[in-house]
Figure (cartoon, rainbow, N blue to C red):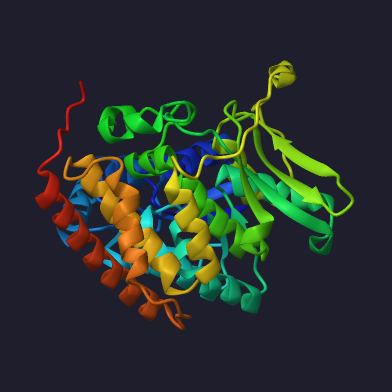
Length: 398
């Protein structure tokens, strides 16, 4: 029986993890949950799964949840809150496996502490490795515990790498759907609406990651994540656009052989793989091989999608640059979603922040969080500057 903590239990990855646990009740036990700010979902999950501990983002929500659970006769469930609460969820003594699925750097400290406590961590939060990958991977090596990717692309790479030794790997290929604007003329990018950018052709995801997919920044984050997870230089991690999203990633070996991982586009499969590694167990998630009859590939257009170029540059620099990349992107995407800046302004804000950020090694999580705060402040200033120049943008969903 594997005993699981979920950081981000009310998000899409968290819910998918609970679905997997429900399908295999003899294999998985939910021990702790970090539920963020969704009080109703947290109450439902606590009632269903009876975790030892559940954490909310805010104290008022924790108080409200505690009261509701007591009324239902579930007062034995410990309710905590804030960053300290999330760390408690991640490091609970009964937990074997931590699913890290909190979006952004909010889950960074808890993920690091889980690794430091000797837990096996399944990573669905790419921002953790973007911002603090050197620290997290070094700690995992020190503890002798694997970091298991849940992101479909890195999970696919992990599976392909079982076909050879790391010193036999020539390069890693990360596939990208290309997002909703692959065939949109660059001249039309200035008029892209929020609704258009949120209309991903393949995956149903949260708002920020969907916008990141539209700008290809999400793929840039995945490049950095791959570099850190698999100890590869950026030059050996390549992105290729594959609209069908049939092949999730590929690994090329020194003899010219290429292994590709193919499966249904269902996040429960990479979650199941991570939870059961190094085993494979039976599931009902089947891919129709006949769908392989049509596969298209093309290189990404870095002129149309400069966020990917910026990510490669940050990956080469490392340290504070990757922290700033993630922080500036989060601020810029939030500003676009609220109508403060246009779609084309997202990479401009990010590049401005990166230009003003010194590269250099960050020796602790505290230093990473300081660099993150500084980059966010810079990004907010750049957003305000662009808003003054251009005025408020339309937030029309028409």
